[in-house]
Figure: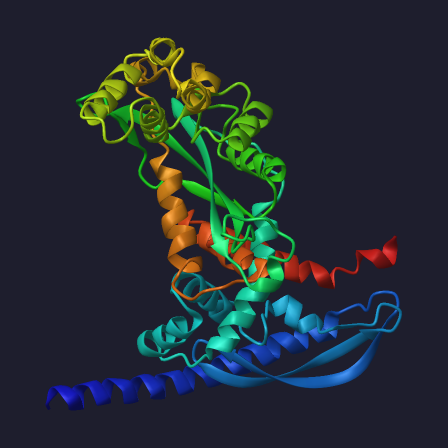
Length: 424
């Protein structure tokens, strides 16, 4: 038997197995639907309108389900109790919906997700259907991210909280009236925030901090910074902020993130990302002596060394003295404002001696992979809801919480059949 024949044989066997498995799954789900319909108690105002047949799809194929339909005239709302009890999502079984949500969020496009499902699992689902499932499940995923944080436990000596923002390209209707950085003053993107929480138990043999393996969890939001801060705080509470040895907030020094830290993490150690500090050092030196000055790079290296020795205030004083009375004095003072605001948060020598991270690379990498890897591909333009749904699922996946979310989702759907309102 040659290679091509072996491949064809495997595909035929898979098709035969899938056909038998699909018949069994369809039969079992129909029996389950009948049990649900037999025990369902209509809520006040609901009336049974008969049975309707759904062409459902699972991981082995398509099958038909007949189930009861109820309608509430006052609310103008229909209800299929069996769909909620079984966790069907846009006619997909829970197992298939979970897989579609994962592929739709993980692949760069819905079309690639369609092809990947077909090639690897023999599952035929259109890109449009994948988008519909992501839209439906993604809104629940965002609500799950925003749920109230139940205090968790943390035995780590250090728990880090970090946040950053980046732009997502949006469709024109999403940008009406918004100011931006384009030449005509209009916007092409919408700001989305990403937050992360991770822990540290040790440093390496050189004293460098080591992030705990798979300890990072993420949350995302298109809401303003005043709403994002409490969302990130809730995630820190879930991760055990109250019991961690020390809480460290790592941000890039932007005023919005600074104020978020003061409001939501006032008892934490606040650190401004060292590499953003160096970017602003370059701005100061460019204003002071110009980028073309022969000593520019040498002096920039000197700034790095002195910042790492807690000399930020000395650098501010020396730079002010050097620029005093010079034409560039006002420009230099403006550039120094970043350091003046952040003196306490730029004591890098002290922070390193305590074994802390001084760079916000974790959340910045998250912005590139979680947000940029899916929402900032060439030619992409999003609605806010579409991007929000995708990012919520990507955050949950990257946080290794898919099973936890889907358990919540199935319970949420089943609760719609709760008849306790009858006893109220």
